[in-house]
Length: 271
Length: 296
Image: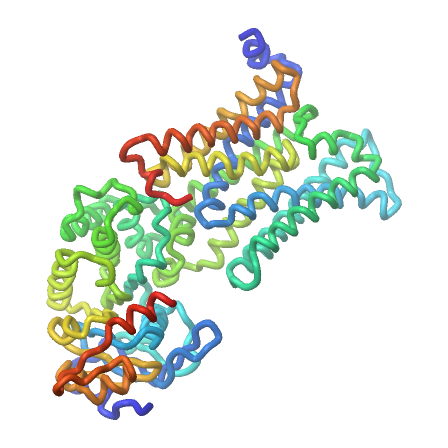
C-alpha cells in the first residue's frame, strides 16, 4: 500500500506542532505501523480513521511515548518525544481503565497534576483550584466525590477529559472517546475541542465515525498500518482512499461511500 | 470479659504475642490493598509461603554446612531466619511480578505451583532440622506463642518503615497502580515505583511470616482488603477500613483463641473469613453502595 506523497505538505505555512517521520512500531511482536509520516500544525483537530486493527491505538501509544519506535522520529515543538514532560495528555480506550479501583472523580482528576509535583509534594491550593475548575468546566461537579466505577460511560469520559485538562497539555490524544458515550457527552466533547483549539492545543482523536470526522475536525488521517492519506477531509475521504483503507468493508452506492458498520462491529466483537 | 481484662493487663504473659498480632493485623492490609487492586491476589497467597521456605532454608544452612548455632540458638537463629525470609520473599516478588508484567504463560498456574512447592518444602526442611523444634513448626501452623522482645521490636520497626514509605509516596504508588500509562506520559519512572512497591510488600510479608507465620500473613494480606473493597469509595477509605478490619480482627482473634484455648492463627483467619462473608451480604443489601457495582 502506498502512502500519500503530499502528506507532510500541510505544515507549510503554519508552525509545526507535532512531526512524525517514517515511524514504524511493533505491537505484540507484530509490525503494527510502518513508515508513517505526517505533520500537525499548532491547534489543529485531527481525526484518525481506519479499520479495526489498523494501528490507531498503536499510533496513539507511540505518540504518548508508551511504545518504543522501531524506526523513525516523533518530535513536538521541534524536540524529541519525552523532552517536555507532561506536554502530551493521553486518554486511553475505556476498556483499558480499571473501573473497580476505589478512586473518586476528584482523586482521578488530581492525578493530572502529579506530573508537576515532585517527590514528597502534595497537591497544593493552586492544584486544587485547577482541579475544581476543570471538573466544573466538564459539568461533573455534582459527581466529584463519587467513585468512578459508579458513573456512566459518558460521565467517565468527562472525568478523563477533566484529568487531561488539568495536565495543561499542548497535545491531547483521545483513543475512541466517542465509543459508548451519550449524544450529550459527544456534543460537549466536540465543543470542548473547539475551545482547546482556541488555546492552541492540538487534538488527535481516533474514531469510527466518518461523518463526525468530516464535519468536526480540521484534518483527517486515514490509516491502515501505513498512512493512506492525511489532510482536509474533502481531500482525504475520497472513495479511492477509503477503498484502500477499508477494503472489503467499503460499499459504493451511487457514488457515495458507505463503510459497512456491521462488518466493523463483528470485528470489534471478535477482538 | 475476664479474659479481655487479662489480655489487656501490662504483665500478661503473652503480651508480646498480642502486640505482634495486632501490629501485623494493622499493617498487612496496607500493602494488601495494592495486591488486590493490581490483581496480584495469588501473589498474596504464594509470597508468605515462599518467605517461610526462606526461613526453613536459612535454618537448614547450619545443618548442611556443618556448623551449629551458638548461644541458646534463639538470637542467631532469628537473624538467620530474618535474612532467609527477606531474601526469598524479595527475590520471589520481583521475579513473579516481572513475569506477571510480561503477561506470558499462566500466572495462576505459576503462582499456584510456587505456593504448593514452597509449602511442602518448608515443612520437609523443618522436620529434618533440630532448630525446627524451637517454635518454627508452630509458626508454620500459626501458633503465636513465642514472641521475644527482639521480634516485637523488629516487627514494629519494619512496619513503621513500610507505613512511612506508603504515606510519603502515596501519590506515585497510586498513580502507577491505577494508570501506568499515565505515569509514563507524566515522566514518572514506573519501574522504580513498581520495584519500591514490591519491596514494601516483600518486607511486610517477611516480617509478618517471621512473627506470626504464613497462614496469618496471607489471611491478613488479602481478606481485610477484599472486605474493605466492598464498601470503599476512595483510596483513603479503602486503606483505612482494610487496616482497621485487620487490626480489630487480630485482637478479637487473640481474645477468642485465648478464651477457648485454640491456636491464634487459624482462629484469626476463620474470623476474617466470617467477617468477609458477612460484609459481602451487607454490601449486597445496602442501597447505593459502591460495592454493588464492583465485580470482585
